[in-house]
Length: 219
Image (cartoon, rainbow, N blue to C red; front, side):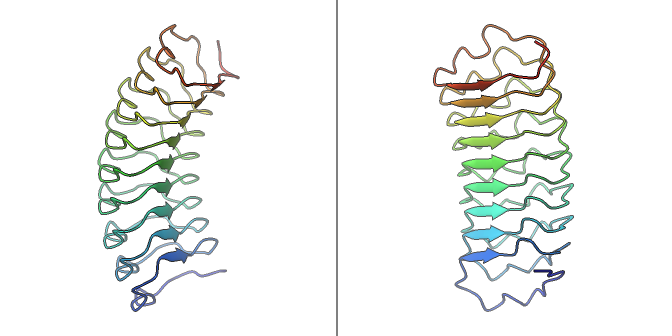
């Protein structure tokens, strides 16, 4: 459709709504109370709009939300407490935006998150504790950013990670223990970077790895 705005009272009586799809519209902003009464909502799609910012209270009462898609918008900044009540969230898509940085508290309460997509943004660096609470994460996509380096402890608590995509960034060096906790990893994408050398210990603990993509580097 071509919906440009949503009145904050539109969903006021939809108490039992569990799925809401507003993708492929022309939304640029949403009132803080738009989803206030949607406490039973489990899936919310807002992708393919023109959303530039999100009010910190927008998802405050969506405590049962499991799937949230904000991809293909124009997001630049996400406030630290944007997802603070989304403790049941398992799938979060933030890809194809213009996000330049991620606050260390952004995912702190999303302890059940299994899939996180941050691809095609403008990230250059990630705080070592960005994913600290995401111990259930199985798929993490960071491709097509501008990441130049990765702190050696960034993935330390991502024990269940199965897929990690760091392709199409600006990585030059990977520290020997970068992937040391990723014992469940099966797919690792590092292609299209500027990696010049690989330490012999880099993949030492990745014993389940069967797909490793290192093409188009400077090895």
